[in-house]
Image 1 (cartoon, rainbow, N blue to C red):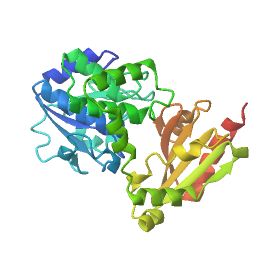
Image 2: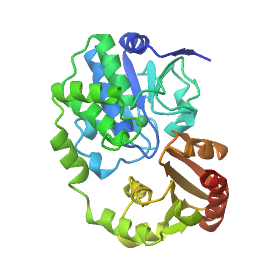
Image 3: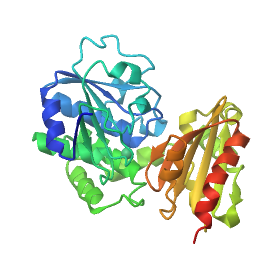
Length: 328
Ligand SMILES: [Mn+2]
């Protein structure tokens, strides 16, 4: 096991030593994954090194405005100059190395892990871990500070996007003073909350709305209305022209129903395995439920994969949740 630290200066020091860094985050990347990866690559460049961002999966179209996104390698294979041209791997937002989709290759160089998940396994040579951080983007602002780097408007835009998406527009329980302090700094550094909100929420492709309608038509209320469940399958994607990444944020709709304590989104896109997203209003610890199936996340937002058909996964998850919503 490598070094575990909550000190951003240790991470900054390690990045300063690196000449060429491969930056990776998790599959099915969200705003914190992509925003943090782009900002981290820029921080490495400002420290005098070079960096390449590699993403196993495509990103949601709502994030297409992020500065530097056109240079991200979106592919399931390693870059052509891997491994010889690199001397460090920076892994962001991954509680376990296999969340990257590239775990078999990444061990060829030392790994620096930066993450804020409660369940993070310290798999890196250095692990800068802070479960109290509202987003990895906030941790990277600390890295920039520790490195003595002035945040550019482009980096501020990436980090603010990481923060605003991971806190659900500053509505989730991670909307702490730290989140607002970082947000204020990033706005001062050139991030525009209005322009970013417009990009994130004002350019929804019609296929996403059609997928939303199809998925919401499956709504079931269970346990006297305390569990809300929706599901989505490959046929719906085909019918609407949507992609798997377009399911992002859908789960917040059943979560918003009056009286619902846990919302569940079942995604049946792969034969034999159903991807499960869980959201709670904080009273129920959905991370503990996800962990039972090898998944992870946070108390109020977690995910896992359950083997079987959609109907089987539904039964499994309902059985796991029922005792939790029934305890007063
Ligand atoms: Mn995050």
